[in-house]
Image (tube, rainbow, N blue to C red; front, side, top):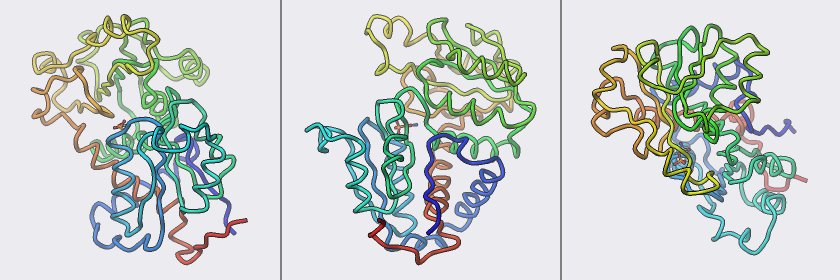
Length: 317
Ligand code: CP
């Protein structure tokens, strides 16, 4: 039997494996109907202990578009977690029902704990303020599709860089590519964590930290906006003080390069005014579509659909 493979961080895939995944996502985008039966008879479980619109529905749509079926729960209160069941026990149970599981949890490391006890591939769909690897796959595929490359650009990451797990995962992924320059734009309270800047310094990767978006906007090839993560704040007062620190509007955008694309993992709150949505540089809704194709490719990859379509059985021990 093939080794069980999980996705906890974007670094679980080599750069070469990511290239293959993105090529596969591109094939899916171009020939969607050809993939309609790839996962016939397979089941995806979505175990979401935290709210989600895009990630959960995108995973579920991905499996349905591949011909598979879905089970799961959309919040912890409707699962036996509300009665005290551990993540370890839950995944052992889910392993009896499904072929693959996408899990979101408010605690850092929860998906890793699940993977340690699972009989099926587990995908980290966001663990607290830690990582969100499938958002990063989405972001990388979007950047590659927009620019034709994943190297030699200046990216500004703006907003809540402390709690924003999509930012942490994206930085980890981008440091493996040549010539990526990072500009971190945040209020002092929401700076990117030290363990990340220490890693960049260790690897000799160039970065700047600034507070004002206006100062660096003209230098950016790509702007990655994020919302302030209300759910991770310890008090409401701090959140209220910081929530509208950055608002990108049409007027501000006039200072940016004509080919500077804007990404956002969404949900958006106030940090991008709706008048920006019609600007051709706004890429955050197309970004959602790329997320579907890359999750389809990921499900196929983790289920090893290429080599062994028929290796399907519920008794795994
Ligand atoms: N980008 C993202 O993770 O969105 P959701 O929280 O809606 O899944």
